[in-house]
Length: 417
Image (cartoon, rainbow, N blue to C red; front, side, top):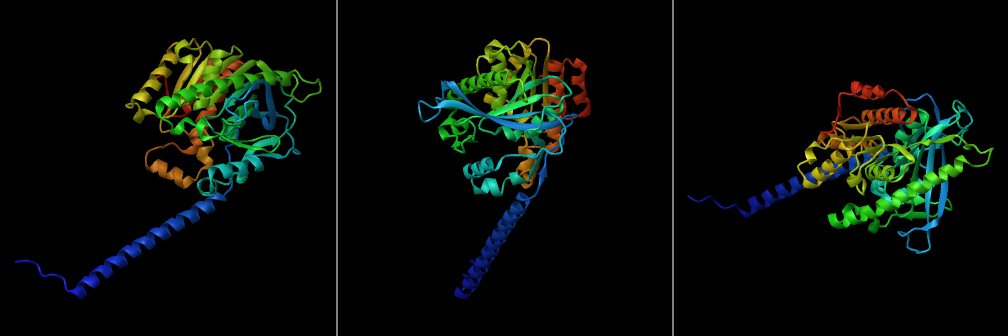
């Protein structure tokens, strides 16, 4: 027997009930979204203090604007434009109560970054960078404890800002190093020049959203430019070190003990620079895929690979190729090599991004298994390995001191897979 049809009155009541249910769901969804934005906005205003450096030196920070008049910038819209960089220097300082604390990112840079990143990312998905507290002071004198200190070049990945790695830079400086990173127009995501001009990286210089072949061509082109810029920065440091007799930094940089480390594409730059330039005495690649001639020709200097957890990616042919290239470089290294993987770490576990991005977003990443490692622990492992490696190969510390971090952190796996 067939079911009786709904009467017109019953049908109206049925659809009215359904409409109310959907309206209630929509209202709940809107309320939940509104509450999320309120939470993100409140979190945005919270103060964030970076991890305390583990060395005994106080830390100073200063900046330089350097123009390379010998080379034009082929990425600039004007064919006559000269290459230039904004360099950030952290260093062991004399303790000073009068020196002002260094801002995480100066106000003009914060404004430019917010403009380029957009309101959602800068005001909801990221902590207020004006409320991020560093452990550096502005332009103090260099510590008189030693006559000169080793120098390490720091390179951020892709378009990232040098200051995204303030935790690593401050910690290394606190152990007695000059740490120098730099940003460059048309390469870094956004740069504020000394005259106040803001230069954003054009999409054509960003390989992230390009087809693989096109992206690889651009990456190899950018690698040559960035490596050339690094050579220029080291040459500028040599001039700074040989400057006026009364200069603050004259004779204080020991450029005979020069190292380099970088994250992501910055790690690729560290590999290629150390391959190209004999001034590099030791280097570290932090979670960076290698590019350039170093893959075929290898390295002669001591070198460390410090990687996040890539186990779930290795079935992908592109990831497997990167792993094979890293293994090939590592296998041909002379004495003075180290291969470290941090289980549970993600690609950004090495930078301040894990502290300054919304912790609600970070929590979602952990829930999805993208990152299981607690943010500050990831930075603690990284800073420990970075200064320990350079202590051995730039300061002649005992080689067995590199065994100590692995004993402190069970997440660490030592040795190439």
